[in-house]
Length: 133
Image (cartoon, rainbow, N blue to C red; front, side, top):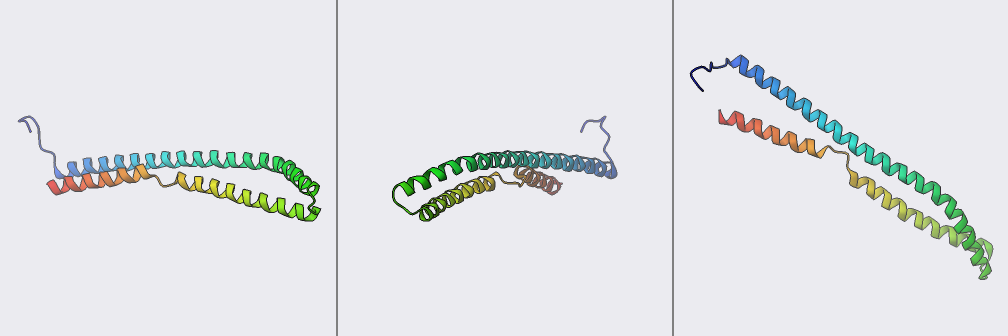
């Protein structure tokens, strides 16, 4: 402190501190909001891609299933058994694809992790600054 600096009163220091804490909280809330929006954008894109895949898959599977049933009947399998076998295989494939897509959604995560780390770091810095005085 130089000779021209005047010491601040305790109330002025507390007012400054509260202003800084308020700014810090607003900034962390803004960061959390941005992280959540980014995660929701990724989820929306994933769900849109999944819906498109389902629509295209339904059309393609109808053609493939019909062809496979016809092939099985041509090979000598009675029509009802051919339909059952092809249907069961397609259901297993659909379940595998669904589980894969669900796993991708779980990996995105919705928690604002950067904000949580920043808040922990800021809290530790505040704690250290109070312990130093």
